Image (cartoon, rainbow, N blue to C red):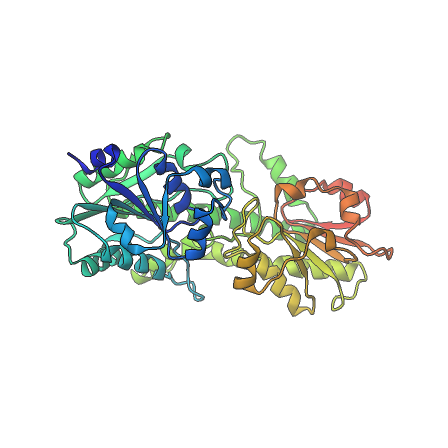
Length: 438
């Protein structure tokens, strides 16, 4: 009997190591079909899940309350499972080199609780070679078992898009890979339980690792091109969004928009690829150029806000500015690696301490990571400038009356920065706003 059949019959369990924005939805999906152990070191997070609360907003409280996932912070519970999926973050250090601490730590914990006959699948984004060259030796050392003899490994890159209710685990083709044909078959069959779109069998683990890391690198480069166009058109006095709308009428024009590139994927993954390339003696040209443009966009936005304050004859140092939205993307509570903080810090360099509001964001996380304390939207008043930074659905309904209520009643020009261009530009200009967007 195969491991897949044992899992399907309920004889064996599947474990999820790491229950964040990626791991938790995977655990919940599998729990509809098989027995699942959901493990995370964060006891506070586990307590929330156990109490029926979804802090990620990815599946919702009702789903968490009814899921059969066995949530735990006890590593020993991993011994009860034979098929393990590792979905921990892979961030970068301050110098943009890969920080493999989370995936190494997860491998260490899993290795200490690994049993013979197990399969371990990594989903964390890494550069080609990490699974076999870094994770396997840790698993072997901690378990005392031999890879290929006592357990097998695979890699299946995560493609979950936080906050996206359309492109979900079930609807996105899943890349799977294994160390040999037997492992690949088992891994493919297990994922086919939950992925309605089907699986794509990569020819090797390294191919699967490479496929993932270039997906986000490609998006990063295309967004960098849009950002560069925005900088150029801004100097020409041309509205970038209007240009893209016109160009977009051609059938093969790619639909990318300028914006801040944050989060734990698009703004991070390219550095994994360029790091490995550097080790092999190749210095990236296009990828790192794109990264430089995107990393500087927060500063660019702040500089243009300051220029508009000057145009409006508003003293910069004493200006009162509000930033609406702090998460790295719309309709998502995640503030990790948000680039809105770059705007906030750059404004501070000019002597401006901005108020920040975001009812969608994880307030505790923002306070812990950045020292930012949010203010309620209703408390934003007497402003000289407002930055509409994130395209949350709740902001799309803002009208001129709502905006007017946030500004000081002094007769001064109202400075408005609409990063994502979600407001009606003409209506704002007609209402007397000094309107600017990327």
